Image (tube, rainbow, N blue to C red):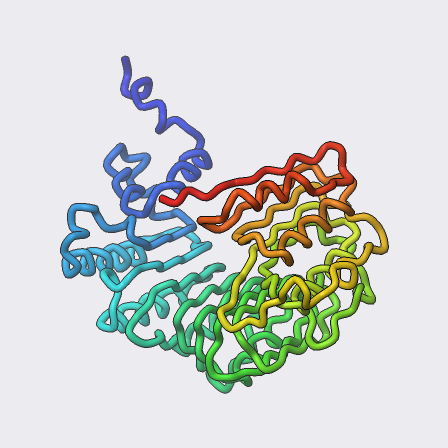
Amino acid sequence: MTDMESDRISCLPDHIIDQILSHLPIKEAGRTSVLSHIWRNKWSTQPDLVFDRQCVPAATSKDPSVSKIKFLRIIDDVLLLHSGPINKVKISAGYDLIDMNSVADIDRWILHLTKRSFKKLVLDFWLDEPYKIPCYLFSCQSLHRLELYWCSLKPPTTFEGFRNLKSLHLEQVTMTQDAFEKLISGSPLLEKLKVAYLYGFTQINIHAPNIKCVQIIGKFEGISFDNTPQLAKYLFADVVPVKLPTPCINLTTLQISINFNNLKEISAVLCLLNSSPNLQRFGIYARLEEHADHLSPVSYCWEDIFSEPVMPFKLQRVKIEDISGTKCELDFIRFILLYSPVLEKMTVKPVLNVTSKLMTELIRFRRVSGQVEVIYHVKDSS
C-alpha cells in the first residue's frame, strides 16, 4: 500500500480539510501539523479563533498558575503565527485562566488584531473589575459583530461609530449615555442589539434606521426609539393597547419571559398575540419576582383580561416553562387552547415540586384544535 493510499484524509479537497479543522479546538488543530507536510500550516489559516478552556490540557488544569501561563502562551503563539484572514476571535475564560495581571496581554492582542481585518470579536471574561476596552479597538471598522461582557467603554472623542457593524451585544458594560447613543447612531448597518444590565446611565435612546431586533434586560427609567422603521415589534409602558397600530406580519417565532402576577405584562403579551397574525411558534418562560404584586383569583375578571381575540391565532407549537400552577397561569393556558384552531403541540414544564393537580387541570381544559397534543413534562429533581 502506498503512502498516498494509507493517508486518504490528506487527499481530501482543501475546503473539506478546512471544515474539519474548524470544528477542532485551537490546541487540537495545531497538533494536526505533525500529520504530514500538507497539514503543517493548515491550522494557521483557520478563520475562526476561539480561545477558551479547551485550549488548556486537562492535566494542567489543576494548577491555576500553570494553566494561566499556557493559556496566554497559546494565544500569543496563534496570533503570531496565524497567516490567513481572520473572521472571528473569541476569548472566553474564567479567573483561573485570565486575571488582572493579564490586562496588558489582552491589550496587546487587541492591538495586534486591529492591524488586521477581522469581522467578529467576543470578549467574555470576568476580572476583579471591568476590563477597559483600549481606544484603538474603536478604529477597527471591519467589525460586523461585537460582543462584550464586564467591560468599560470610553470611546475617543473622534469616534463616530462602526460603519460595518450589524450585531452588538453588551452585557454588564459601563459607559456614558452619550457614548452609547453615539455607538448606536454611528453604526448605520446595525440590525441586532442586545443589552443587559448597563451601568452609567438610566435612559436608553435608540436611533438606528436598520435595526430589526432589540432585546433589553435590566431596569431603566425610559426607553425610546427614533428612526427605527425596520423594528419588528416594540413593548409597552403605562396603558397597554389591545392591538398594535401596525401588525407584525413577519413575526413567526416569539420567545418571551412573563410575570403572570403582573396584569400589565399579561396584557402586553396578549397585545402581541393579537398583533401577530402569522405567529406559529410561541415560547413562554414564567418569571416570579419576589416583590411583585400578586394577583389573587378575586382581583381580576378572566373575561376582562382574556377576551376573545379579533381573529383566531395561527399558533402551531407552544411551550410554557417554569409555571407553578397559579390561576393566572392556568387561565392563560386555557385561553391559548380555546383560540388556537391549528395548534399541534403544547408543552408544559412546571417548576419542581408541583402537585399532580396541575396535570389534572390541563387534561380538563377544552381545546378547539382536534389534533393538539398537550405534553406535561416533569423536571428531574436531580
